[in-house]
Length: 87
Image (cartoon, rainbow, N blue to C red):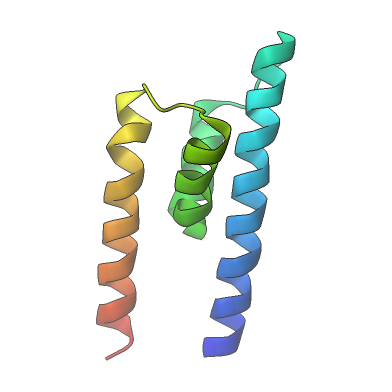
């Protein structure tokens, strides 16, 4: 069970990181964008580390308050939840 969760977290964070990069690329191209709701949902379902890394590496959504403050809050809640459920 723990291995499955670890694999899931690795995959969802890699996917989230890449989606943030794709959205940044689309923004530069003036192309159709990935919705902010989708970007936030990816973080909520376990991709918060990938989202934070994507913000830093791609310099994407760094000025939006819901991302700047929301993503760290999501990560903190996830860490607390994992700690609570692992007892």
